[in-house]
Image (tube, rainbow, N blue to C red):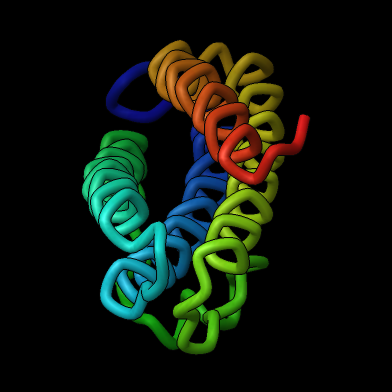
Length: 156
C-alpha cells in the first residue's frame, strides 16, 4: 500500500496513465496558446478570448494532474521531449484560421476525454476516489465545451 492506502502496483499504473494524460494536456495547452497568438479574421475578438479562457483552464488541469501523480507517490514527467513522444495530440503548425483551430481543439478534446474515461476505469478498479472524482469533473465540463465549440462550427 502507498501513503494514501492504495495498492502500489495499481497506483503505478494510474500514475503512468496520468503521465500520458499530462503529456497530452501539455501539447494541447501549447497548441491553444498558439491559436490565441496567431488567430486572424472576422472572429478574432471572440476566438482570441475563448482560446485564452481555454489555455488558462488547461494550465490549471496540468498542475492538478501533476499533483495527483505526486499524491500517488510518483513523479510527473516535465520534459517536452517526453511529452512529444508520449502524447497522442501532435504539435500544431501555426494556425491563424479560426475554423481550423476549433476543429483541432475538438479533436484534442476527443483524445483527452477518451484518456480520462480510461483513467475512470483504472481508478475505479483501484478504489482511487481522488483520481476518479478529478476525471469525472473534467469529463463533465469538457463535454459541455465540446458542445459549445461544435455549436460554433454549426455541427452537432
